[in-house]
Amino acid sequence: MTLIVHHLGVSQSERIPFLCEELNIPYDLKLYKRAPNLAPAEYKALHPQGTAPVIQHGQVTLAESGACMEYISHKFADGKLFIKPSDPSYADFIYWWHWANGTFQPTVSRVMMYGMVGLSTDHWIIALGNDRLKTALGELNKRLANNDWLAGGEFSVADIMLMFSLTTMRYWAQYSLEGYENILRYVERVSKRQAYQKAMRKSDPEMKLVLGAEAPERFA
Image (cartoon, rainbow, N blue to C red):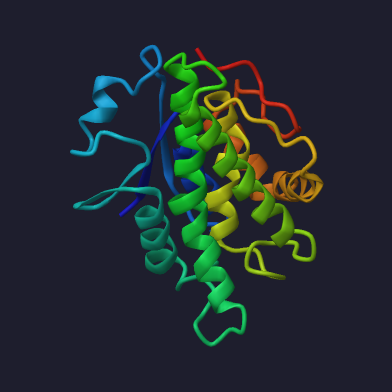
């Protein structure tokens, strides 16, 4: 049974082709364009959640980035890119694996939503969102000062999970990485991985990659 990856353009489902390329497993990539900003009806019909990513494998249809990544790694690659409990860096891995999508991504998403509703920059909720983002970026920058990857010396699914929030997500959430030099070097390291380059060429061939300090013009 072929693994089918449904990718919505300019979205977090780019994580799944990235993972598949890292694991060197075959997959059938189906691309969907936004209509005009949200997922088209045929994408929403794939799963009750109606969001990206979605994968299919035989009778299994699965959503949620973490669930899809765990399923693929353990089903096709014996858990590769998941740090084992016996590894000394396991606790670090578990923390950053969950931090990437459980803390950082929601923080970035809130900043995105605040910007879309047109609140003034001095509104308390804008200040709160920006402060939480600054705290998260500071924590991440500190972590990457002496570690090439989130789990330490070994690249893992935590890095695949995080990359979207630091790059493509900034088409939606206008935040800068100016002054976070460790994060910028990390983004550069990830972007040079062959698997990342192959996945992005396949997933969003017309999209300019967001790899610098400043956010691009908001996606519209």
